[in-house]
Length: 71
View 1 (cartoon, rainbow, N blue to C red):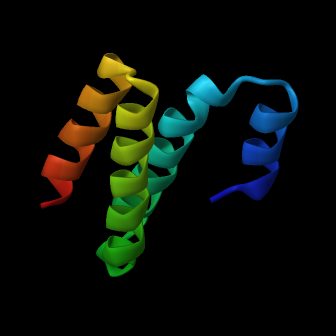
View 2: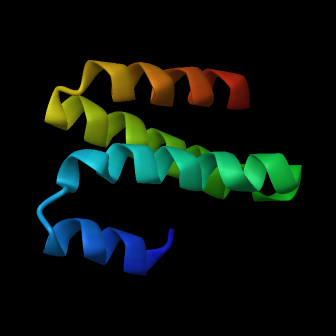
View 3: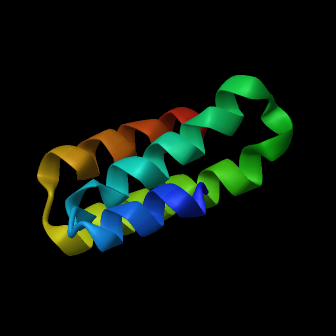
């Protein structure tokens, strides 16, 4: 994950985008190669967990769809 982006989110109090950042970070390796599948799946699962914790239903749905495409 891009640590800088996550740090910026926390610095500015925009933590509601954290789930999206995890999801995008999980989709990127899948688009590039299948070799990073385990890492991608972990990021997508983190996105799903984060969205659930934030009760962000649309972000949760996007993460779940991305994870289902991975499976």
